[in-house]
Image (cartoon, rainbow, N blue to C red; front, side):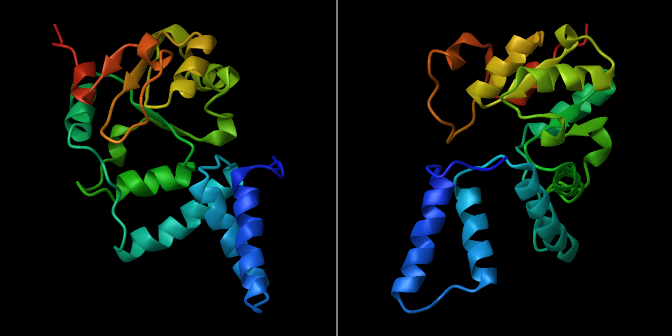
Length: 200
């Protein structure tokens, strides 16, 4: 999907290219691409093509050992609990499936990729679109009402709720954007371990 001319990424791209031209340094094609990609990343553009490009770049970094996927301290024990209680864990991210597998396969706590049953990205649809969650439920072969979807983004949870997701949950982490009344309307957790029941 083409970004509108007034999108922050488009404005930043034009501004940075103008700066180079004013310095009598006509940007090369490679520089223009770099400026555009950086502007899209900073504007948090959720474009499938951009995420695929990032995945390719990350692949090199993970392969060399320069990069390690960061996971929160509560993530691994939550995964272990899910595995011991036969709870299916699936990832839906704006990052490409390839990037997801790299992150979890080369995480700072080791390879935890075996904990995930399926991976989904924006090829299933945008995370702010209700239809995406219905499609994923269909791909998983489960009723949307059986799914617990955890996110720190209000718009994603609204879309999930519109799709009929049974348990849309707001995850609060330090540094998150302040919650609006919309976000406060969802069950809130401060640790993923709050998802883990007693097992009884």
